[in-house]
Image (tube, rainbow, N blue to C red; front, side, top):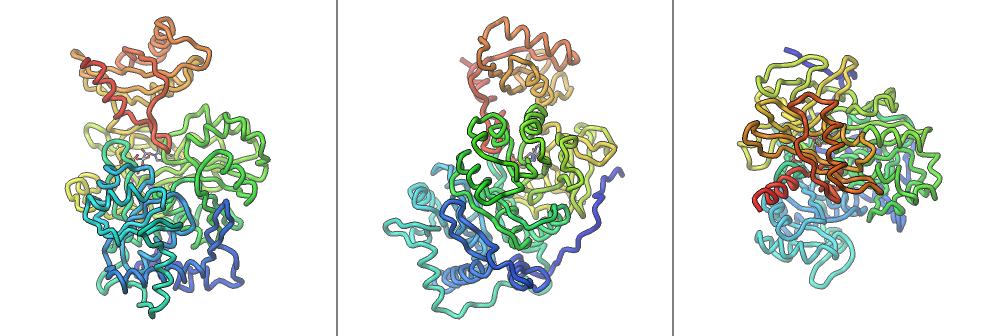
Length: 548
Ligand code: ATP
Ligand code: MG
């Protein structure tokens, strides 16, 4: 059996405590027991500077949890959905849910009524906490799934007929709190789901991933092992409802006794201002924001010499952008994290020894206690160094499964404990992981696999191409053939001549079955907020074009 193993020493992960007990009650881990205490560490609003230190988080979350239990009968195992942008109260609501033994679920505030209805349904939510700006969608979706109106609260602010969690905290104060939820006898924290996170919905509808208390604690221990030294301070640019936000901005900062600075609404200017005001040294970003860092003029108005590393994850980033980033900020280091919602964030990442642009196109090294296999896409045979196939990963951060979806769970999490990532890639001789594409996106030409990302990378290197997306288009003879949607650079005229040049460019560099058969010009290729190419949307468009 060809098993790739982490090079890092094993980390010990406690199995008998909840995440609440781990950060707030356990002397060994809680910042509240650290001496000297870092008095100001906590969640901070980047704009108003409002701050909740860890002691205040514990108090407010206890009050909220108590109100939910005593006045609304909230029970262990029930779900509360948070439907909000980033605020310091988001993690308070999260901790309140966890304290009571519930399941916290984050949903994108960009969802419309239909999407939110689906989200509440698959997460089986009993309560919904939102912001005044999202209240209309929240109420309509709550009605659709039978969540009573008085189970919809505001995370902050005011709106008619809706009470806020601050009101609930005041009510909770009246009671003696119950002790925090404990892992039942005979079980471990691996058996208890505390977090329901949606996958991004890149390849289909989002799935409700069940994460255990163990998953979260393990991932934080794995990340601490590869943390650069110094006081931890992070800017929460990415949304808290996504797995990265849940781990990196809501949970890990307490464990690290650091600051999590919440950016309430993202603009390049608000982000850059916060980076400077709070002297943030480490940024966890996604490719679309990194692209803007190297392109937007406004960046030049800010002095970013205190930033010492960029981190990118969630989606592939092109070598061209990495090179531009290094050129623009030569004093910085760069790392990637690779993983999925089903792996509580990272399967691999670069440790401080690898915060170097020369490793930047890889997904880093397996984090502690993690093993991986690469299997052939057609035969399932286990592959070795340098051989490309599906990446499978096993470790304490691998999720419990999908809520109420045993078929999908059995397909994705095998009986040996491996998570089938659906990603195609390989390990090199140094143990660095290289992600090449996704299985679901592979184009099959006469039974041969063509990874669209390989052709996109090639086209992006052409001087006339600004952006592009390649997908399989039906072909009578071959089954499928690659077709490219291309956005041309400013100043380039879309023309049959340009298309011919691009087709020739590919022909000269790739074997015949990978040749692109058609170029269609477009103004934009559809992408998710994290920069993932949404090929399924293009496929629909392509099909509509063909049917017309
Ligand atoms: P869905 O499973 O609902 O289709 P999704 O897989 O995009 O959506 P997430 O769990 O948010 O949802 O994303 C995980 C995926 O993101 C990985 O499987 C991988 O394809 C991609 N990814 C994450 N990190 C990286 C990275 N550093 N480089 C390339 N791709 C990455
Ligand atoms: Mg996925």
